[in-house]
Length: 89
Image (tube, rainbow, N blue to C red; front, side, top):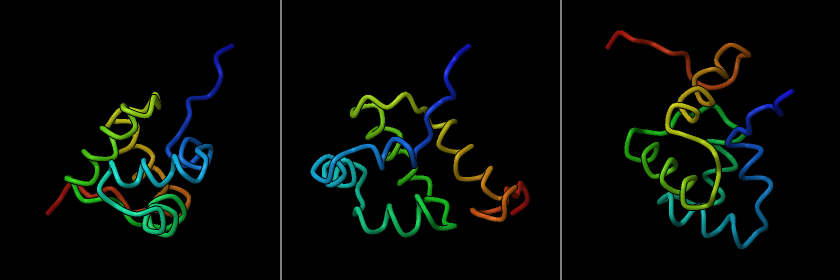
């Protein structure tokens, strides 16, 4: 049986402090913002940050695609966290 796929929270919190700093810098944000608003909070990154996060994940060896990141942020709406997925403007 395959292990469950890693998500952004599990990946990021598994990094040591220095790696978290480098990951955040590569993604164009801060550790504080990642922790408060993206990992724990209910914000969905804007498209440019989503792209940067996907690139940082790739560079740091996380098996997370942009689609995985989108699912991470939007699926939390099902549990009352994150932003609801709205296809209308």
